[in-house]
Every structure is written in structure tokens, then in C-alpha cells.
Image (cartoon, rainbow, N blue to C red; front, side):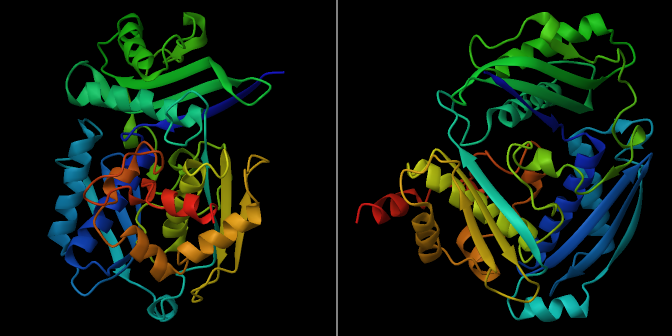
Length: 386
């Protein structure tokens, strides 16, 4: 019996993603000044207003003008130059203040910045190059990424920055993807663009994101089903940092510990441990030790070593699961200091993560998406040959 699974994505112009981008742009700004900077920066965006609040600690902090410039540049690069939300005249309120001395006490001892549970996941989707990600979320991101690139390159005139997608994948009895059942895309557009003009333009970029022969019939593709989407972004809906944590990770295909990523430096294990577990799970699958790998870890504030470490391969492991855990602990230091060092997380690499997913991305030579590297694959393979 076949099953259906659906994931959604949102564009960089979605109001919550605008806030994630601002928070991560400010994190990068702090790290450029001081690689050991600590930040927990939250952003709210609404009609012609951005409010930032949270805690920072750095040897050298950016001044108010640098912060405002970074915010306006981020909004401009997303593409907001419209009535109701414009990078040129959006009002900015800065409520950042120093990190709590109580929190700093635990982090200074190289302990975790907070308690919590984090997950990492990877899987093979047979026949597809998904970067060890579930197919639905990978395609949902790709559709919107295609539309965003077309907008920035002016291949399509009249698209706005705000957009959403949703993809339903059909799986057979063996858990293999066999088709796409439904696609939904809603994209902001100019007032003078009709739905009849918009739909064929958008369909072209949907098709380019899908495997050959997988484009559903027209009645299974919903484009702007409300008929009109002119008022978008923070002018249409209030945005907040950290409200798209499922979009940011595995599209609901794997559990989430609940902690958001954007605006947080790597001493916050919500972010750094989730990155490390993705790295480990991906390398486990790439090494052929399992076709699917879910990892969980837990921490206590101020304590360096994790309290627990868990694995579930959904009965796909080719070797003993607990042996995989043992080898991972031997190869990688799971203390906050170890996470930061192994993945080089003190660099200003975070703004690109704020849209189209933190996982399943291509690692860059500048350190971006270092947790997507397969640098542990050979060591894991060799460990099970002995």
C-alpha cells in the first residue's frame, strides 16, 4: 500500500524568514568583529518596522550604525522595496543588551549554553540525488530557490519576495518514492499580473526542480489557489525569528528538539549540536552503515559532556547500531568546544543558512555548511573493516 508524505518550504521573503535573515546577518556581523562572540538575537518584523532584541557578548561589538546598515542591506538583498516594507525607510528599533552573567558563568567553563535535546537525520532516497535528505523537503526548497533566482535575475518580472511551496511525495510499499501527488505554490506578485499570466511562468520553474517525468497533471498543481497574493512579507503578516524550524530541518520527516537556530552563536547547542548530528548521520549513511540514520543527543546547561546519545536506523543498519554510537563517540568530541572546533563554527557563515534549509546544502570553501561535508565517511568505513 502506498503512502503520502508532505513537506513545505518558504522563501527568503517570507516574514519569518526575513527575521531569520536579520538575526543571522547580525550574528555574522558580531563574529566578524570577534570570533568568540556570543549572541542570541531575536527579530520581529511588521509593517515598515523591524525590532531586534536579545543578548550579546563580544570583545569588540558592532556599533548601532553598523547594526542598522547590516539590517537594511539584508532587507534590500531579499528584495523589499515596496510600500509597507522598504529597506530604505523601515523603522529599526534596537533592544540588544549584554548576555546574562548567570548564563555566561556556565558557558565560560565551556559547558552547554542551555539544556535541551537535538536531532540529526539522513537517509538514502533510492534513485535520487537528495544530499541524503528526504525528497519532499528537498523538492519544496528547490522550487522556491528556482523562483527566487528567476526573480533576482529578472527572468520573471512581477514576482515579489514572499512565497511558499508544498510537495506531496508518494512512496511504495518498500518506502521508495515513486511519484509526486500534489504541489502547491503561492507567490507574491505585482497588482497588474493576472493569475493566467502567473501560472505558466511559475510552472516552468516547478518543472525544472523535479526529476524527469515527475511533473504532476495540471489539476494536481495549485498555484496561488486564493487567486491573489499582492500584499506580502512583513506588511502582510508579522514575522518572528525561529518560527520555521521544520522548514529549516527535515520537513517533518524526522523529529525536532524544539530549539531554533537563527541568531544563535555556536555555544548554543540548539544550533551546534543539531549541525553536528546532521553531519554524523549523513556520514553514517554515506559510509554504507545504514540507509537511514536518526541521532539524538541531550545536554544540561553548564555541563560539557552530553547526557545521552541515541541512534535509530529504522532497521536499515548493516552493522550493530550501538557499535555505530561507540565509534562516533571515539571519532568526534561532542562537547560544545568539540562541536565548534570540528565544524569550524566561529566563522561568519550563518546568513546563507537562513533560507532554503540548513541541511542538504553544498558545503563552501569559506566554511559555509561545513556540517554537510563527508569528511568522516572513510574513517567510519575503516572502523567497521577492522
